[in-house]
Length: 573
Ligand SMILES: [Zn+2]
Image 1 (cartoon, rainbow, N blue to C red):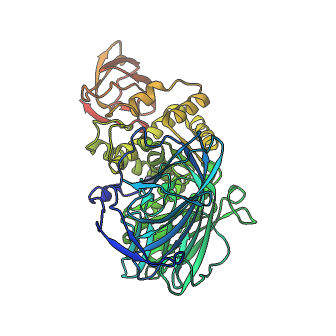
Image 2 (cartoon, helix red, strand yellow):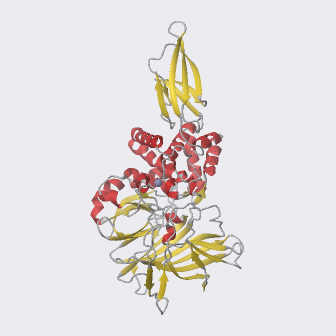
Image 3 (cartoon, rainbow, N blue to C red):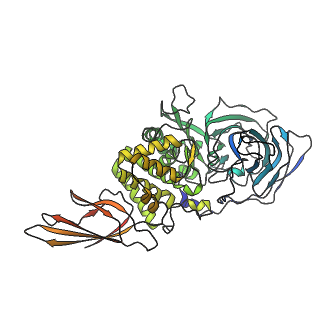
């Protein structure tokens, strides 16, 4: 995701309480009075007991009916679940819409639906069983699936889930660690195109007259996702969209591709009014995919669509269907930096996913850093350094330097979209690369991706992988940068002591002047006087180093001359 500062200015979008709707369902003869419950609040961190894992969703089969002028939807979802314990308690996340019926393995059944949960005890099911839950629902989504007019005044429908707003339109286990495959069958007005994760199963076909959802001349679009993805990545988007191809990528390196040539197609889907304006932002998208494939590992999904949408974020990395802010594109801004960030997310965040929201840096820090690495590869080191410097300034100026990157006390998930998880997380990777060197760093990254692709991980797994690959103990590194707050504020001073002739001793004093509550950082680095570099390990409030010189250096030494360490440096002359 990108553009979180914009997000923080928004209030939670809880809309239209206390609504009442009448539906005539095609599955029942008599009209149904369907009261939609008030929605719960979005973005609240789950408590430890919320996801006990009684059921594990393996697959969602979703049918949704949309209309051009209707502000309501109708859906039917089948959740195929693996039973993880005897007599499991089914707890599905769902809120704000009404439920017409729920059945378990084909039998209609009673259930409790309140406070954002559908609950039912599935007595008699045992560990290892498979159970299929069918839910028929309808109403006006309060969030998650945004129905409304786009920037040009045309109706569109776009899903915007992050972090846990899938539950506003799709009954689900709305937790990043519960990944599943999904297929969509979307009935949408004939003049619309429909995008979703995965690959398009054949051409759109005419929707039967009795299909669910608002009636009208509609087409049905079927998309299928063949590899497990997190619920927050499950999206559909529909509207008057033009499709442009950027090219083929990751040929022979895209195992989920359904194409005979084993490539993925990179496209962009934008409003007809904005086709020309969008071109500069997406022109290198295929090149980005190839770069990350080469650097990290095979492309994980079936295709890659870049979609102009009504997401509240600058960009949202939905697996294989990235959604971008409609405003940025319609205003003609070049958002290549966002595009690179979101494409990097396909590997980090989407394929390898943080098992818990508080480990978000595994997604956002990685996308920030790898997004910048593309520009190092494509545009040279200067372009990359510029991005790192702007990241550094954001960390230093940020208001959350007193909190660590992993901040389990933060209960408002939207507040995790902060300078710790983005630029500081990116800097952690940069520092690790500086410490381990390119070869070990990228070797570790590739092994980490290979091992955890399509899975969910915590920071411990990443640390362990980097330790195994480098044969180095990295507790100190992760402890000071991930689990503790702040960054080093260094003060540098030199004193020259003459010896015989021009010779002398230069005493270098480096102070760590950051707050007492922040750690004293261990910083293996070097100080250079032009090409003459001396290794130092800064590890105290005050470190002094003495170096012999044949003659007094004409310039002040430069600490960390290649810029591998996140810091604020003051020189004392
Ligand atoms: Zn991101």
